[in-house]
Image (cartoon, rainbow, N blue to C red; front, side, top):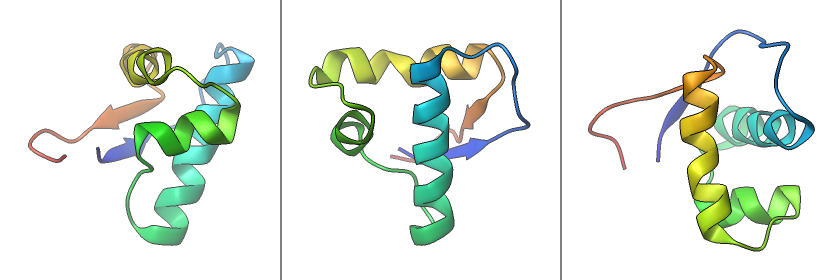
Length: 71
């Protein structure tokens, strides 16, 4: 999945902050966002289903934007 991170959002949970930080690091280093399992490993979440719903929450809060048509 490809995400663009937006401006800093002050009302994210600790886990959400770690996920946004990991997405930013991966985009800066590799030009694309990490896979769901890479995000989970980076923030200590073993359930891919739990990690999978986080980008939707972050998008609703305005922290990231998913680019349509990108895997």
